[in-house]
Amino acid sequence: MYVNAKIVIIGSGISGVAAAHRLVDAGFRNVRIIEATARSGGRIKTGRLGDNIIEIGANWIHGPSEENPVFRLACKYGLLDPEALAPENQAIDCGGHPPFVPNTFCSSGRKLNAEDVHHAQEMFAELLVEGSTFATQGGEPLVSVGDFIRSAVLQRAAEKWKDIDATTRSLRLCMITSMLKLECCINGSHSMDEVGLGAYGLYKTLPGLDCTFPGGYEGLVKNVMSELPSGLVTYNQPVRCVHWNNTERRENPVMVECDEERIAAEHVIITVPLGYLKKHQSTLFDPPLPLHKLHSVQRLGFGTNNKILVEFDEPWWDADCESIYLVWEDEDGMVDQVTDVQRSWIRKLCAFTVLKPTERYGHVLCGWIAGHESEYMETLSEQDVTHTVTQLIRRFTGNPTITPKRILRSQWFHEPWTCGSYSYPAVGCSEQDLENMVEPLPMKGSQSQPLQVLFAGEATHPCYYSTVHGALLTGWREADRLISHYSSMSPSKSKL
Ligand SMILES: Cc1cc2nc3c(=O)[nH]c(=O)nc-3n(C[C@H](O)[C@H](O)[C@H](O)COP(=O)(O)OP(=O)(O)OC[C@H]3O[C@@H](n4cnc5c(N)ncnc54)[C@H](O)[C@@H]3O)c2cc1C
Image 1 (spheres, rainbow, N blue to C red):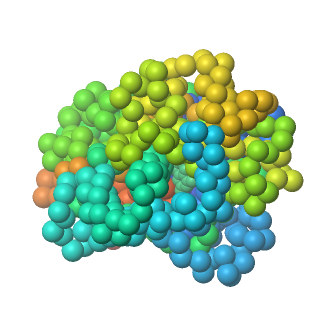
Image 2: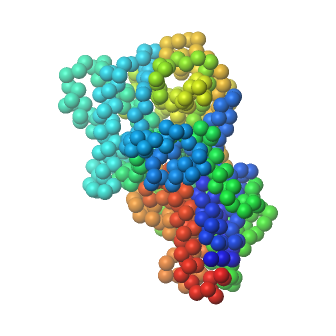
Image 3: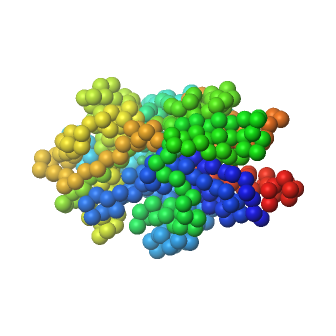
């Protein structure tokens, strides 16, 4: 099949690249991607810290197994280590929370042992599973995941921890606070009080123990791009406005307005991040988005999760340690947000991932910090961040000599074409909001030319939002929508 219809894809992240690949493969000859920045990949962004390849954006393939299209592509292109390919690795089902070997430190400079941590961890894990059942069963007792966890912990602690001393009990509650902060990083939310309990369980996980790309996540994008005609992407060309439903131009009812070009098109696939859409929807569409779609854009959550990568000459963690958790001993209120952000933003940095294997990375930690505290951190100089992180580590280890060698942090909130990290179902959201996000324009029943504006990108996936595989699948979904539209047309109409 050869199709000449003009298709413009806005954004060259994985969803845009995947959509283009599918269309070109199906015989569409007039496909362009318009990208605001100088590179493809969007939130897949590989960088360097000294000699090390590090990820500034996406880190893992979540659920690397046959059902995961990112895993399948990574296998096809030979991008993974042998362990990730092992059937045993693919069979592990950890429900989105891989069992990393932990080291836990607390604010008085003590290292906790596994027994100290176990009870709080077990209760928290149970509650996350319970919290995700309301999406299918309804009847959620409270509006947010944060409220649910707090109230359930208090109730269960009164029964299960009634015989323990006050200090141990308080420490366990401090651990729950720390786990809530980490959950903010995983969800990309400021606080778990902003994540809707009713929709929390919409997110689905795949089997497989999360794995990384030894040569960098961007290798995935580069390999897919290498199969596209050269010159298909126009870089440094931000789209300012999508004029759609132009009834005078039946052939190409959409006009994509950029700073230096106006591009007539029959179909446009929008893949810009939800953060960008929230901020710019009023000027990005002419006519504006229909109200129900606009309200879903506003209702869905999009927050910030940043990384602070820190390199050391020597490790100060155990050889088998995969994750480091920090517990503040004065935080037993299970409040996952900081009151005085400017003074205490660092309290939100709750965990580090140890980059493995050591032979590849040396001694590098990836710190995680979400929310407004993370957005504030972005405004500080690298020197300030280094100083504060150093103080934090010295305090929690009780070792005043530890000094990082290098540091690099991401700044996703201030990235003008992203405006944050990823989406989550906020309080008040339902499945309907995700369906509204996906719906092409004009809406069903309209007399106008169909499928003028289509929507892809991670925030439009009904259950894999916030992930690379979710984003990739949405690109394929919208390409398939156009492919089946043209396949079902008579040859004369389809411009074959
Ligand atoms: C810190 C961090 C860690 C993450 N970790 C993981 C992980 O471990 N595993 C995982 O699966 N996912 C992870 N993710 C999420 C994952 O990176 C995203 O879900 C995925 O990359 C999104 O792809 P996308 O194509 O939807 O959007 P993007 O990659 O954001 O692509 C959108 C593109 O649109 C462009 N654009 C925006 N506005 C315009 C405009 N007006 N005109 C033209 N172009 C425009 C942008 O520049 C961008 O290139 C992480 C994300 C972050 C930020």
